[in-house]
Length: 434
Image (cartoon, rainbow, N blue to C red):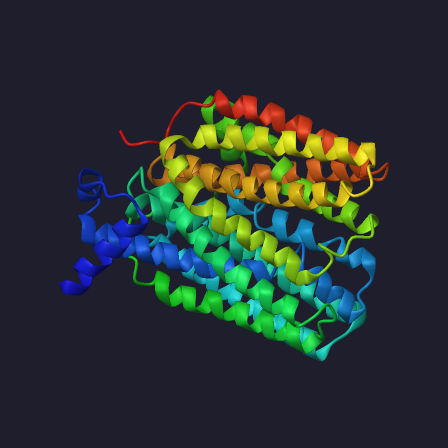
């Protein structure tokens, strides 16, 4: 009993107490037990993500292994779209699972094994063959991540009351950020010439974060469901189209989320502009990881609490700040004043990364708060599948504009972000305590 009371005290140090809402989900001890395990498991997963990162660590690994540049360009599309596109098709299978925690555990275990296979590949293979094997492992990793993405929102909705979900997401983000800063500092201390052995060791350590997360997640007190999908043919495609066509509020959320890609897609352009300026500030791998980690630490708790009050307004404000930051950086780049461009790019990279933390926490909180039960699972799956398609489209357009230079691509993303702020602001309010 004392251990249970201790978990409640720890939970309420991290998350604002709400006895009435907690009573509806089995009481403070049950909510605290589930909430703390969700925080720890998500923090472990996010820590692993900082290492198995298609924007930083994996491209660095490819360069060390001598992989062709064309294969490097496949990393981000496979990682991002691969974890989103299949979710609508996987929905019927997930709905049949009586315990959604087990779906998350399966996805996490597969991600851990995929990361472990990347580490082994780095030690045993080189060149294009190593790259192909890593890409295959990343494909499996992304598909497994789709299961975790779908199940985690449902488990959180069943075990954490509205008004605390944003804080749970924010605390997990902040914890992973602290670990990421430590990893980044260690990478920076090892120097710019990181060998294959060091990178393989980090990938192996990342694999452990998912495997430990499986053990943590197994203890979440989740009531089994009856299973939501009947056997037989699953018309997931027609159901997806119907949901987007008939559910106006959900359709507007998907549109808003697509327009908020400015905070996700702008930072890599800042990096390439900084490198073109001859700056060494952002060249080191450790510096990238440190910047992401600091953004998570600073933004996680703050944006989590704000999202519990109004997740739609956090999305809107984040889009405005990101877009204006991008436009100001573009202005400095166009002025080309010596001594100003590189500091502006570095500051812009951090600010947009920080805002991206808020946008991610807010949109996760919004989709969990806007529905209940199996409908929440369908919302998450359809939204992510639609985003997988839209990410490819927006990414392709911005990449096409980038052939004329980074500035046109950044301007397009900033304009889309301002439109996304307007759409987010007009979304119905779903967060906040009833």
